[in-house]
Image (cartoon, rainbow, N blue to C red; front, top):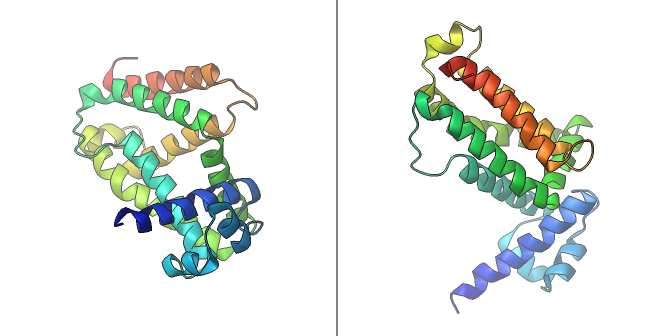
Amino acid sequence: MAEEPRELQKSILRAAREGFAVKGFYGTSMEFITRSAGVSKGAVYWYYPGKWEIYKAVLSEEAERIKRIVIPPGLHLTLADALDFFLIRGEGLIDILAEDRLCRLLFIHLQLEAMRGREEMAEFVASLHGSITEDVIPLLERIFPEDILSSRGITHKSFMNMFISILYGIILNIDLTITRDEAKQNWRFFIKNVIGGITGEA
């Protein structure tokens, strides 16, 4: 019996995930979520005050899942490990997101609404980015001594933003302008030239 509430929540989030990915936040109704999850509105409102809270739960879960893939708990890296780590993690993420169209659509919809000036969406994007920064910056600081990056005119934060932008652009274009293999090739070229240039392995 103890498992039932968790399973109910999972059903709600699964249904919402599909709706938000395909229709976007504003195109997905609470009726769609309840009908797709096979639950009553009362059951949904028991766990979530409204659609916005469900949306944040879905996107936050996606962001955490991606972070766990890229930066598993207890990860310890040195500069010598950096090249292989970024190559392997990036290619793995490309594989996962190439097969998970809904995940990609979720973040595309979020970015579009933020760009359209939806204040709550822009704030949510900033919140997710802040959460990623909290986890990634300390890792980069351990791998890359500050003088290595500052000598190239960049900070750990700008370094992180560059990686996210490049990877996001590659993933966004899979099956549109590039194949999955081409996406991996682009990632390898970028990593070998950037990380390899820093570690002397280029």
